[in-house]
Length: 241
Image (cartoon, rainbow, N blue to C red; front, side, top):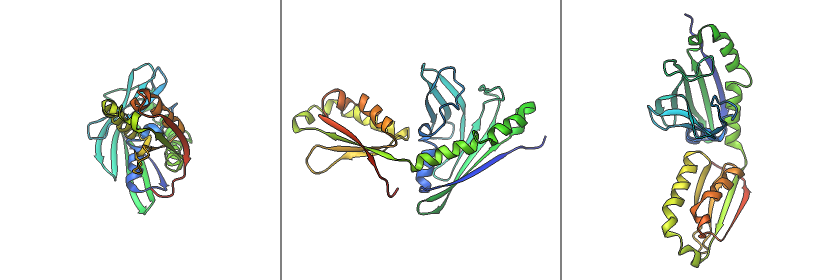
C-alpha cells in the first residue's frame, strides 16, 4: 500500500513559544466552528496539554466528541496527534492516522509552522476523496490560514474599576475569579491580566476578541458579587509579542 501524506506549511508573525501555545492550548480560538462532527453545535475545541491527552470537542448540549489523542507533546517545537475520524466522519478508536505539527523559529517574531497529515491511505476506498478534501481550500490550508489570522488579529483590553469599599468583598470570591482567569488563559482567549499598581483599584485583562472579554465578564464572581463597580472594553493595539 502506497503511503499518502499531506504536507502544509505557513510562516506566522509570532514567537515560537506563542505560535505553539495558540495552536495547542488556544485551538478553540481559531478552529473552524463548522469542522465538527457532533450532533449539537460546537461549544469548545480542546487539546489536552500532555502526551496521552485527549483531542476532542464539547457540544452545546453538553456531549463530547473525540478527534484523537496526543502522542508527543514537546513545547515549543512539536506536537504529534492521532486523527481518528473515518471517511464517514465518525470517530473510531481503532482507526488511526497521524497529524504532526512542528514549530521552527525563523526570527524574533517569525515562526515556520509545518503540518503533515500522514497515513491517508488508511481511509481505503475513500482515500482519494479524503485527500482532496484535506488538500482543498477548506481543508488544512484554510484551517492554517485561520490559525495565522488569529495570531495577528485585534486584541481587546478589559478594564475593571473598584473602590476601597467594594474591594473588601473580594476575599471570598478570589478563588473563583482566579479559576476563571486560568480557564480563559487555557482556552487561549486571555493573554494577560493583573491589577494596576497605582492605588486606583483598577485591573486589566487583554483578550483575543471582544466576545471573549464579554463572556469572561458575564460569569466573573467579581462582577456578580459587586467587587467591580464599573468595566469597559476597548481595542488594544499589539506591537510586540
